[in-house]
Length: 336
Ligand code: EPU
View (cartoon, rainbow, N blue to C red):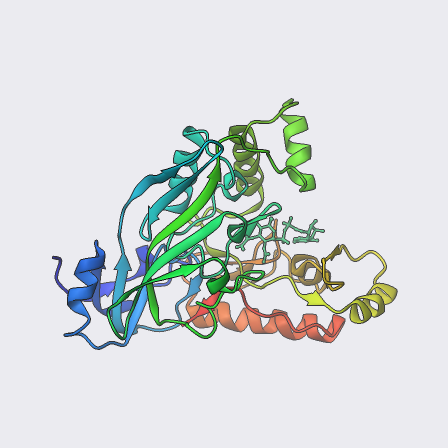
């Protein structure tokens, strides 16, 4: 069992590279270890995975629990599909590559997303036409009040676009120890997203394998999105707004060129990146806080920006998008 460490710098533990400290910090390597801790340490806790979807604006006073539970295992093997279990502390992208190597399809479009398995369900990660919920079977998590291990099936997680029950009602209440996905042994690739199709054509691939799709996604992501190892960021800072059909029609009248994705329920999703670019923010910089030059939805820390600087920039962007389009952008990144 590892012991609690004091005054730990968190800069290397969050992809924005914010230089704040944790008063108390503990690495969790197993379910049992956390269950032994809970009766003695009543909380509050601060759960840390890959730190890739958070903006830290101050030192963390709650006990930081760093999820390092590791496991990669096929737990049920059927003719066409398998159930794969992964520890909450596993790196997402390494896990994706491991599945592809085994010929298991379903998450290749989610290649190169930073973060851990345990964090993936919290915001129902998604990219290039696929969301985690499409392959998610269940998860196991420790209730931080009782110390009991509980199981959540797909429906229990209440997944929607970049949302789950763990971001709403159960926020901060559970530590996700294990995620179980259902993957396919005879995968059908999903190349519905235009950028993937174009990249595969450029790569001269006619009948793409899951590995080809993964390579295409890696190519697209690395040309558009800043590498957090070089420039601090947390991917998309805002969610793409989903508008009612009526609100969208009105908007389209004023801005006929607005890109849009109709949803099954009649609403229409519009890209926040486009709204931000049109509002004039793409490539802008205030001190070391910036709006990325190749993808306006991503805010970046060029070096010494503080969490508050990024937050201030994000609020300025929200205000000008609101003024120009009447749309209130909501954050995708969690601010602490
Ligand atoms: N666009 C612009 N200017 C920009 C950025 C985007 O005009 O600066 C417009 C373009 O019309 C483009 C459209 O927005 O065609 C969509 O852009 P993109 O394909 O880059 O996707 P996105 O909607 O900006 C979402 C996810 C990303 C995910 C991509 C690909 C959200 C909040 N973001 O971005 O996820 O990788 O789709 O599927 O849904 C993340 O969540 O951290 C993330 C990076």
